[in-house]
Length: 407
Image (cartoon, rainbow, N blue to C red; front, side, top):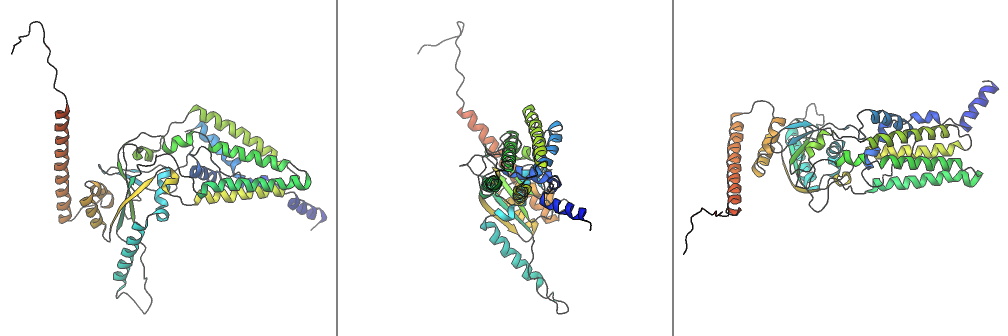
């Protein structure tokens, strides 16, 4: 190795090029971190080098479909609890709620499910050892577990709870500013602190765009019951019974918001500012390792935020647990659900049993359909009768030519 090569290698480590670090994190990670934390008045997503790549990709979205929220990273379907109509879910929030269900499910769901899995494992393993080899002692999936939740009437939809993941963004920003202040204290170099502060301000400003809230919760209100599940073969089906103040989750699953011109304007403006920030950062020669450390802290935080599980309350959809219905046989689970919640079990039948049913199963569902139709007709007639009784009689109109009688 020549002396020039040694000098070049030493200079690369003493003055590392920041531009090469910009490709270490993709724009999709930044977008998911924003999707996790946005919706508050203040969105503390950490500044990192990935923001430069995100600003370019977001610029394309601004002039295209003008959509900020990412596509779901967890496939699922949403079923109308009355009609049985199923649609693919395109809402990132609903997809994450189902993906994280193992994390936030109540004990009233976890304990019975664990007991059922142990029972099924024990029965399936009896007498199945072969060649003196140990057999699996625990199954991870069996039957169907239907967890029923209601909209929390004491809390408003679209108001996310600030959990520790949210506050970690503020803590990360403070740590980054402390690291960036070290060159100012040691070498009177204020450029690192200025670049870090500007990056934090731009990152927070991006998360505060009003359209994040519109895409998350800006849908009409409707009293509907829906089921979230992965479809046939899934272990869980999450039922959400809404009220008159709940958003229309079917419309939310369609995820077709209308962007505004203001969003395009601010997105383009922020992209220009990020480009200016990039030009400033790549030309920093003094104390570049402190800037690298600031960016690395932000990258680690964004990767963590983008992937960590959260509760429905943190996504602005507060729920109250009602009951859990499960059985080792999927058909038995649906029948139990139908017994307790008419039409709800039937709405999932086509999804979990798209083929032909056994005669006794067809007889059960036909009987339940007749009973439900009869009950709905009776309720409709009673409601119509009550409205007729409550309506005031038409006032008499006496005209000059009308006959009158005196008592």
